[in-house]
Image (cartoon, rainbow over all chains, first blue to last red):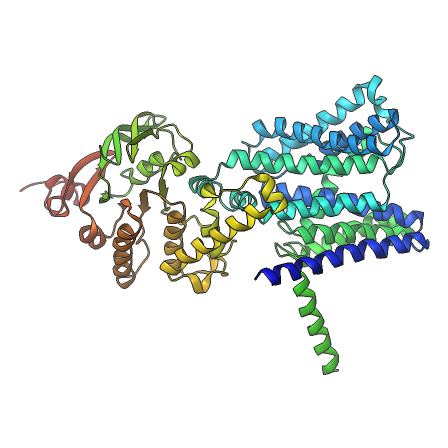
Length: 323
Length: 261
């Protein structure tokens, strides 16, 4: 059992390092050019956002429409810090502080609103995100109001992106595979039964909310330090919906589904660049078609695992033989 | 001091009094029935005992190994930690989770690792998970569900879903188990089997059991004492034989005797 576990661990480690190395190589020989690098950054940030929202909505069952609000807190905190002190330690400090602040707001908002259920919670979280956005618009002397902050130094490169993305995904995955994570899933399944089985449902709902907000704060900080420019409107209602679309498309309750959806949507939107006039129509059409044929999301609540690939490999080998 | 002492328990929903001045005493190790016609307030009593409802007035005192705790007004998860577990009349399993996970989740209150360990999978995580998994398998074996551990709970046949609910309740390591119509929807053979199972788990887990049941064959066979509830009021209490011949109980079930016309 122990040997098997460590073999699995090594295989995972190899896969992670390989992914990092291959992309780093492609960047250094300029096959992934600046434009594709921006797409890559978007993908990574979206993965963090989608996986963390999935923890709240897909796994714990709390419908939240305020994820962009948490993201903006991380983005502004980090931006303000590195605008003053443009060094890498300050970038890391800004990211951490942004994430902590987002988590704090998540805690303060979550405590009263998580008593609400379903649509009511969605409206409350939507309201919270709007309040945050309007605060940023009105705190003119700090945030430069609706004009936003520009000229933010860029510290985010592939290495940092990779560390933060893999880090958050692994931490959330580990959490969900623990008794604490299962407590969250039980709340989604049946709140009364969960509470009767000794699970402090309020605590775990707030906890999922806080962890999700923390990760969204990280994503915001990465966004600010890559794209030079942030303004309150970037983190509006539509951004929250974008993230929710990824979660639903990938499958509520599937981490790999969220990752897949984040990648897929970025790829689709990149491929559609050449049809600029009808791009959004095609994008929406693709979403509609996917949801008609896979209403439970691309992966449902299943996860992609390495063993699945080997099975898939055998399946295709079999197909070839049949031909 | 009895294990559970319920004193003058009352619950009103607006103008409707669902339960009025109910008093129940359970001694350690007893198996007691709670019966009554439909709408008598039996499940309301369970909901009050487990904290799903907050009583309007009255006391619920649990005496576990000499430590007394007042349960009224406590949150359900605290009551569970105090040692009360239950099943539900309209089965409330975690339907989209596996049989294994259903039981494993209920062990949560005894899990000995913190959040940090759950994020980083430290040694304490592996040690505890191993312990939980083994304890879960042991429970599933008792209920003959070990062969179906990876099945989704919703795909189990009805009788096994009832068994799984009892297994899940036992996973919380209770001293008092409340069973809400465990035999509902079962055929006579299944009921007989369940009767044996309930007797057996009481011995094995050193439980005190309070059960609501409509199936009189089960109640009369295994309950040592029976409480009868009608319109939210206790109308009788006694051994199954006493209850069977109690005039008020017969009236409650069959209607009042009009007498000779």
